[in-house]
Image (cartoon, rainbow, N blue to C red; front, top):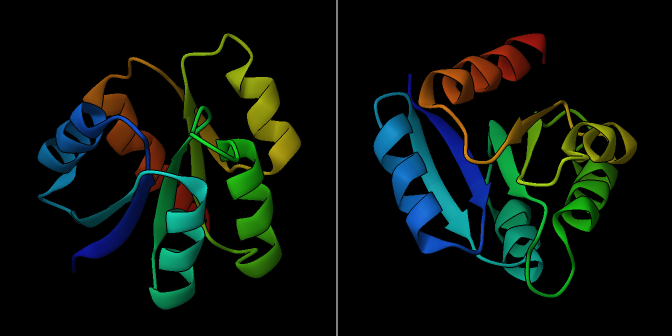
Length: 118
C-alpha cells in the first residue's frame, strides 16, 4: 500500500531528492510554505509529514503546532540543519527529527518508526 506523505520544504532540490528516495513506498506532495501546507492538510488525508524548520513566513515549528491542533495523531518529523533540532522537535510536539543533510536509510527508518508508533 502506498502511503501519502506531505513534505513541507522551501528548497525544491530537497523535495526532489525526497521524492526520488521515497517513491517506492510513498506518494509525496510538497508544500513550500506554511500557508500552503495547512491548506493541503485541510484537503488531504496524509499518513505522515516531514516539516522543515526554516520556512518563509511562519516557520516549521508553527506549522507543527497548528497541525497538532487539528491532527494530533499525525506522525510528524521535523527536519533542520539547526544544532538544536532535537530540542525544538520535542518542544513543538514532533514525533521525531532529522538533521540536515540526512542519510536516506535513516530517513526511511525514521518515517517507518513514527508511522508504526501511530
